[in-house]
Image 1 (cartoon, rainbow, N blue to C red):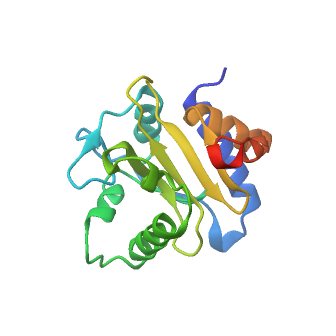
Image 2: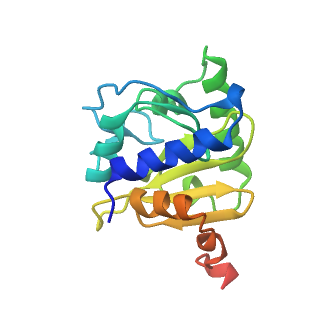
Length: 180
């Protein structure tokens, strides 16, 4: 199995090839994430899992990434604020809040806010990735929202591998009780 760094490198390369010159992926430098990964609950952080640690050590934000912009840990705190000066982050916050309030069975409405982090989101669509933190696992699940609906991945490596393989089978798996 490839490392997270190898999977990230392939995903970044694929995104670079898919996008036109104006929307090329932009990677930010890695920032201090020693406080942990912010959840949707103000002031609550989760310890970075091994895969997330490797991801955050590689780079900070990733603009024009898969499923919106991947947020650095400082940007993940934007959901705690009422007034956001940065236009991109304000748009992301508005988009995420609208999805959370209007998307049936959204992770943020199913779980306590201290169990959900917004990992990636778009300022102009409803694409996003939420991390869902469970007590019995080392890695958070990734719940991915896009035009296919909701897809769940057991960890970051599974998500990246599915992206690289263009495997969209996760969106057809039924896991919501009402859909079974």
